[in-house]
Structure formats: C-alpha cells, structure tokens
Length: 421
Image 1 (cartoon, helix red, strand yellow):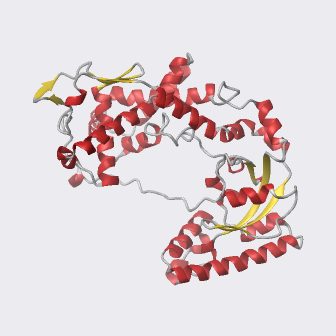
Image 2 (spheres, helix red, strand yellow; image 1 turned 120 degrees about the vertical axis):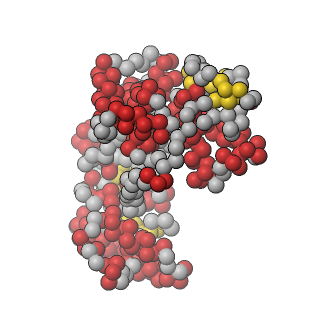
C-alpha cells in the first residue's frame, strides 16, 4: 500500500546510502543560485513530472502476512536471526524482509516477474536474491564510511531523527494506525527509526568526508586554481530553442497555456511533439531552426543577449536569472550536452558563437561565453565543489560498495520464494 510511509521511504531510504546514482542528491533543495552550479539536467531540463500522491482504496488493500521464515518446512524463530552479514553489519530478518518485498514489487512492475514465476525459475530467484543483497549493500556504504572514519551521530543528529519520527507519527490519528501502516509497508518501528538514522548518518558522512575540505573533497585552493584556468573552466549562457518549441496547439490545448509555467509549457508542447510523425517532426525542427537563426542574428547584431534569453529561451535553469548562466568543466563533470560544452570552450569571454549549436535531444543553442564571476564563485564555492566532485564521489562510493565482504547465514542456500512472508 503506497501511502505516507512508503512515499517518505522512497525519498529518504532507498536513495539514502548510495544506490549508485543517488549520491548527494538526497535532501538537496535547490536554492536561487543552484541552477548555475548543478548538473546539466537543469541546463536542458524537460518538464517536471508531478506524480499524484494517491492512496490505495480499501478495496485494493491486500492483507499483509505476518512475518515468518520457513526453511525446509520448519518455522524459524527470527528473534535475533541474522540473514547475512555485510562487512560486519548484521542484517536482521526484519530488515531483509523489507527489502525482499520492495524488490518483489520492483520485479513485478519492471519485469513482470512475480513470486509465482520464481517458484519454478530458479535462475530468476537467484538474481532476485542477489539484487536484494546489492541494494542492502549500497545502503550500507555510508555506514561503513562512518565506522571506518569514526564519524558518529551527536545529540543534534539524534534530535533530528526523533523529530522526523514524531513528524511521521503525526500523520496518523493514533499510534495503532501508525503501526498498522508500518506493518502494511513491511516495517517495524525500530526498522523505520533505523532508516531515519541511516539517512542522517548519510548526511553527516557527506558533510564530513565529501564537502567542507573533507578528505575526499576538492580543496578550496585547488578548485579556485581550476576556475581561473580558461582551458579547464567556462562560464556560459545560452538561448535554447527546442525542436518542439514551435508546435501549434489546438483550442483545447491552448486553453490556459499563457498562464502556465515554463515547465508546464514544455510539457504541453513536448508531449504533442512526441505524438507526431517523423515528417511532422522534421517540419517542426525546421521551424525551430528558423526561430533560432532569428535569435542568433539579433545576438550577433548586438542586441542584449540576456533579454534574448528571456524572449526566445526554453531553458528552465535560466528562467529566473539568466545572468548567472552555467559553469562547465572541460571534463564535463556536469553532464552537459557535449555540443554545448564544445561550443562554450571554443569561445573567448563575451563572445557569441557564429553558428547555431545543435543537439539531437534538446534542439538548437545560441551560445555566449561569459567572464567568470569570482565573487559568485567565492560565495557559492562549497556547492560548486559538491557539484564538481559528483563523479569522484560516485566512484568512491562504488569502490567501497564493491569492496564490502558478504557472509551468508547458514540457511541462505535453502531459501525459496515461499520462505518469507
């Protein structure tokens, strides 16, 4: 049952440890300056996808089975039972059971593989168990880093954890309702608290080791040297004209369009563009190119570039203040479109590119290279280093994960898909 608890878990637990791609994304709320220092999804962002937070109706709720472990037909006492140990961290039956049902749901939704399927497909069941273990292992990476670097939670951290627990409980009319919901999510109260604890530990590990001149963070002095090297660092701003930008809307689609946010407008037009035939899309690309060429001519004729960004541009990251632009590294740590990166580094400061830059995903760019704003750099250096270090952080977390040793419990090889309820 997807309700308040599961929604929170998706945000804080399954993304908390590592999950190879979630590192340092969790709990980052974008501020006014973030568009200039974060990754390229902001540069060329498509529409925001807003999922409804609907709750399952009573008719759809399936009874949650009582927790149990059966091996060779015998019920096992799971009190203090250890399913496996990962680098010295014991994984209890309760914790394993949560990930078991999480992974089962994932298999059903993503692959169409059900518990019934795995009763006869031993190979699929083997992969299923392996995926559970890898998920847990990735969650434990920052626990290992905390242990190995003597990073401990303090009183303030514990207060945050307790506050999170109380806030979660406040969503329910009674303690019993809260516990019932935990049960439906295959959780216990202790396990739920441990997840808040792990999330807070993740935050602390990131702050101590991967930021603020931590042992795995780029030092301020080194970062400033890189920023001052025009061959390694560029500040650019652009006018992005997507292929879908000139799509015409019918009356029903156009209703209320002018009142929509840029993100919503992108959603409307890109959705319609995606339904077009190849010939129709080719026509739209030509229209978009004509508009981009018009903007390029105005820019080359000396019109205010930032005003042209506001007039012609479709980049969400530049909507609020295009003067901030984007900061790019030569090694493309931010993951920008390669064509955009190459165009920016080919220019001198304050120079506008002579030609359009095209990317087959995002459309056309008119690129201008800006001087590096050292005042802005110094004011935002910690966030910029965090963004700069993302590839190295990912690599380090992956290395730690791959190096963790696993010791399986005595009954591991006897597990079947029917063993756990």
